[in-house]
Image (cartoon, rainbow, N blue to C red):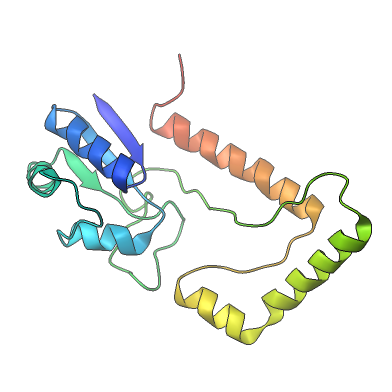
Length: 168
């Protein structure tokens, strides 16, 4: 059976290694390029008794493939880490981050928050630190965020379809 595991931490890496050990073809994808680069060098980001030889054996035998980023571009920090597209899949997915306030929050507070975030994304030191860890920073309006979430949902649906994860 072909299995895609999203995440390579305590749950994802252990699950992927166990599924591979039981004979499945497992692809592990993680948004954290540094974690995947370490895994590709044979360094596990976590410790569980017996996990290291399990991961190494299944990687060497080709049942466990450690992918990198879901994004369309390779990481600037870890350019050796492939993307899903590099690995032959037609899918790339971005990851959104942001702050969402509860409905009905007074306009005076939401105005202050919007102003603070617009200023933060203009701050050169903030942008420099974010770029050093491959984070794209931008300000988006509530309407723009809603559109991005809808677009991201469509990308995730394509990802689910590409990996055959949709319910039948």
